[in-house]
Length: 132
Image (cartoon, rainbow, N blue to C red; front, side, top):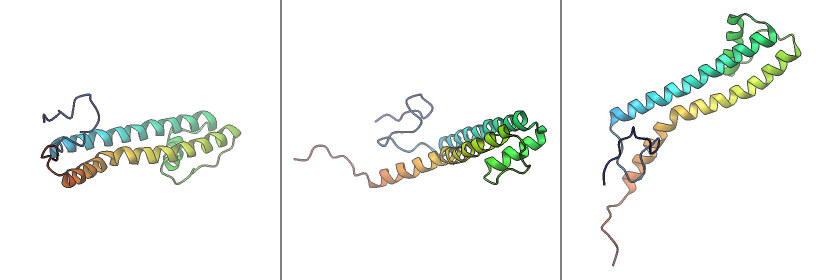
């Protein structure tokens, strides 16, 4: 059975009937998925900074601190004074929880897939054709 190049567009991962990709290709995949997760975190951090800046009039540094603390699960640092700021902070906190879970899932997906793929290959028996 021909081995599919992992960079082609048929899918993100190799199929269960295909062999594991080489270690170097797997490490490149891990780097791509980690970069994707960090990109998601970066965009989310910018959304939070912009929200604090527009709703509370915070400086960029204070907005960064508050957004980073919420995104990291710690909570806001500066007290909020406006109803818009409080509403934004609540919505951003819920959004941040989802971003944390999705980012973690994106980062561990290639590792989990490789583990399951290897486990499947270990259990697979050779195909001797139809049983008679």
